[in-house]
Amino acid sequence: MPDYRDSNKSSKFFTLTGSQTILLGFLMLILMGTLLLMLPIATKDRSCVGFTDAFFTATSASCVTGLIVKDTQSSWSLFGQVVILILIQIGGMGVVTITTLLSALTGRKIGLLTRSTMQEAVSAPNLGGIVRHMNFIIKGTILFELTGALLMAPVFIKAAGPVKGIWYSLFSSISAFCNAGFDLNGSYGSFSSMMPYADNPVIVLTLFALILTGGLGFITWKDIRDHGLKFRYYSTQSKLIIVCEIILISVPFMLLFFLEYGDLPMKQRVLASIFQAITPRTAGFNTTDYNNFSDAGIAMTIVLMLIGGAPGSTAGGMKITTVAILLIATLSAFRREKSPSVFKRRIPLDIVQSAVAVFTLDLSLALTGAMLISRIESLPIRATLFESASAVATVGLSLGITSGISTISKYLLIVLMFVGRVGGLTLVFAAISRKRSTTGEYPKDHIAIG
Figure 1: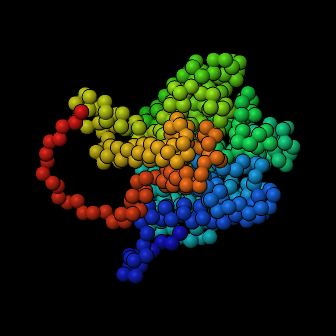
Figure 2 (figure 1 turned 90 degrees about the vertical axis):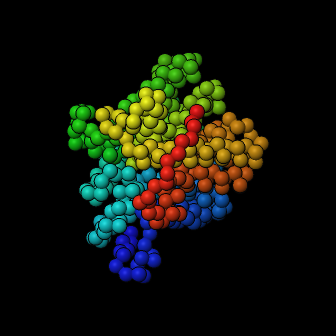
Figure 3 (figure 1 turned 30 degrees about the horizontal axis):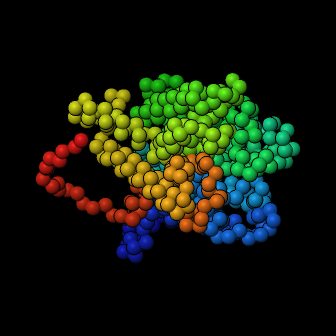
């Protein structure tokens, strides 16, 4: 990654902010993936895929979403599948993380600007030690993905043979850890996801663990590594993430177990409930057909998709901490407290403002996308809201409408996936490269609320 410095006027002109670097990095990754997927060697029938479908697939893989217009196993060749997996890995770990790894391998010095961009990319609290944190991310990713692949390999080898079985297990493990939702189970039927293994505890529980691990974020895992089970020593962010994660898994599990899967055998009922409680945030796999869900079940899934995972993780969505801070601020307002707080720590006003901005932006994008696609395709808002929320939260779950929508609707989903992955605030900050000076303040006035 170029580390331009402000030593002269010409270098100032070419200097990119951290947000602009992240934005351009993802754009270049998507375009390179698109070109590779358009090659005849990328498809099983050696035909050239059109630009739109290749662009959609590359965006979905790079943004670790999982929405697809072509079944991954039956449409793409081994070359195409490898390209998709590389896009998933880079998109999940982050373009900046991969660039840093390549810089370290080639012996290049990592400058201050690059370190600042790294901090922004992984939501690290401090600039100090950011390179060590990146090394921890890379090593942890390799460890978790290889462990997941080894656990699932016997099942896939039994189903598909040694070579394909190993490839399927590695592909599924990376896709799950990166919260991407791509799978290679098309031989059981196009777009079947993990439904063929709905009653297999090894596959379901391993995928559950990988999704959870990737979605917790490496800031949280660093606290767990450093302090073990001594919860009181964790950072406030890690404490908040862990508590919210427990709530966001256990409550949906109970609701699904009693309201959606009452007619299933007990074993499959438990596995389906626990898997569908975690996968909307934001893995994109499914072991049951969401078209069979009640309206209440669909609404709950949409909410879980929009919430997403932890900041600095492979998951998308508006993030657990965003929603938690909004709820804490709301309770603080009810209690007429001077400022919101959690775990005996005050939450600064700028953090609350950012949470409001992210929540408003993501919700507006999901609703706008749903209404536009519903109008263009003459589809019920239930299906299009599920689809647009899945795109903007980079989830990948679908009610089966993705492959049948028109070109303009596909591009709408592409925009939602891209904005959802790089972050709406990152996009805004990339457009506004210089922060305005705010040394003064306007006079205060009263505006009634509620």
